Image 1 (cartoon, rainbow, N blue to C red):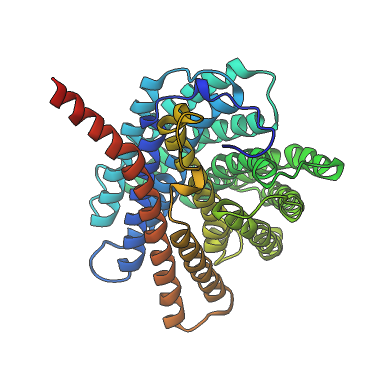
Image 2: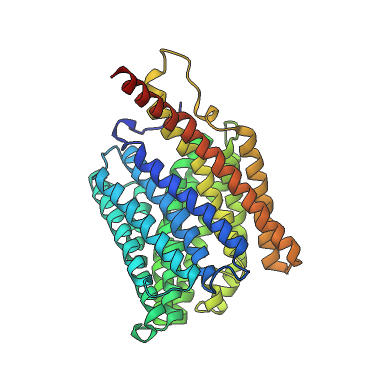
Length: 439
């Protein structure tokens, strides 16, 4: 079922509905984000639609996916039971409800309820952090993945508090203790480079060697130790430097962040180059990462050294948002979902039948041809968006990039939801109907 010598304990995993619920809501948020991205230039939405789009992508798609993935795989990786399945359901309701209201307020221009919806999201993140932290606490001593997850949880706490302050600033800008630019810069640093990328790096250290069947060698481990020494510190210094508007502090933090990203990129490239198994949707998407990470680092470093506090350089060089969020985080999330969703469904639906009857493999649950097409569309669309930002391509090519990304997202979402509907929902409904008929 799984490649290689994988030391995980599926007996401690939570109920299937918890991670799948997060993933389904996250995929729905991604679809809404794509729609808003395509339509936000018109008169349909308020001027703050761009901010709604960013939060639908980062909070709705990426962070909800992270919450679902940690809920599933921290117990599996660490061999301990989830602290509270009930709290996992509470966090999903708070995050989904808070995000829906937050995005609606931004799209319509009705800013008055923004702080309340932001508070709901913050509470959801705090419940998530508490639940996973209590779970991780039983897994000590931490390995490299668990340490990165701990760094990410600390970032989730900090970034959610800053997020409420930003939401209050929409309605009461005079109440902000620092400038809005400073607060936003720190918020972005902690959210994207702390909460999201720390989670991504921790997971990749586990997943790439596991699924490429390529163990880390001595050089990889030295790079891994280097990254772990400089990257979390860099995120903290970058965020603090931006918050207090001290450029040398932010510059040092930015330098350490870029160095950590490059170290991870080299490790990933080396392990993928030595892969000993056939490449599926997961590894193909992971292969994009070293190239995208290296390009982002080379593009961003000169900008952060020159003006680390600049408003337009919050995520890196101006225009690098698509490269980092789609080219790195997006391909990680979709690549992982192409294994995680079928894996969860397979374990709950077919694992107890193995050896007694013919059962499908994990890769049989999704449509491979659709996965190949959505990968091609997403890759082409991302390249057009990045090139458009870097060299100012004609507007029709930029719109073509948006359309290609939208098409790739639609196919990937449909492919993954089909797995859930065919192999999880339909059998459960059939079993329920059968029991009712027997009664």
